[in-house]
Image: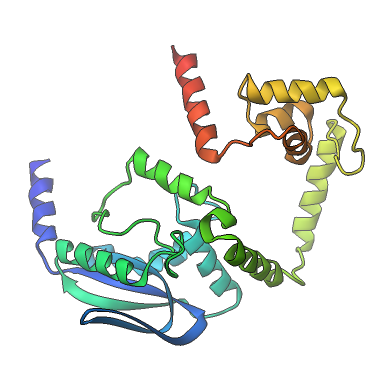
Length: 277
């Protein structure tokens, strides 16, 4: 442990770190950000500021690898969705080094400065998908459970909560247009068909073909399970062998506020503790 501490201290004081920006090649133009005598210029809109070191090899490329995951609970999914869109449109994954040959402290300070200058999109202040103000990472660092929960809460926000109504509707429209004309492969269609056939054989119900398959007693029971037994919508739909849509409609009809992801995680944690005790 002592050897590792000395090694860590040695690495921190070496000028091997850098700060980089990821650029959205769908949005060319002159993007200038300045404050006092400091100025940053880009040929494409920046969407992420990060810090890396020569020990990490090429940190920006890690984001490209990360976007190949279908879903990552503790990842920055807004950033990854932009990269996925670039890959899908066969556009260049572009990044530039803003400053190199920095010590770790200098790289943190410069990362914080760049984020404060360009500003974050989750605060409706700028284009960056960064979820923090920077400076909190450490080479070889693993996020604490508290930080993971913070990322999870930020990612669980709806588009409207994150961007405001006008920008959210534009974003949703863009995503919808990007999927137009998209066709599933024969293998994927066959797999979906087999999955649904199996569901129907096990008593799965389609809410839009039979709107009245829930009795009044069922509706009341669903409300009780959600409010008093604190079951999630996912758990309730498994009990009734249906999709989550009719469950949500029953709860919405009674003006019952649906739980956020963070609230669901809190309840699960509490139930887990009770089962252990």
